Image (tube, rainbow, N blue to C red):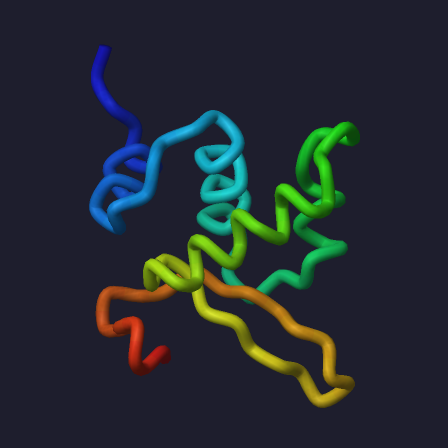
Length: 91
């Protein structure tokens, strides 16, 4: 069985491939903009644990896969990094 683009991307960022991580990454890839925690949770199965989701986002961010963006209201949104992002600087 061939690997999905999500699996390749997770491995490229030295992240363990799990079904949940693939699902979260697919939600980011389906969006053109940033998502907050509530929006993302709404797009995942109802039984998704909020803490597991938050930890996944932290892991994605620390590996340079996504970056966080504080909006004017103080809420944090997350967006998939582009090719020119690095763990030090995001675009």
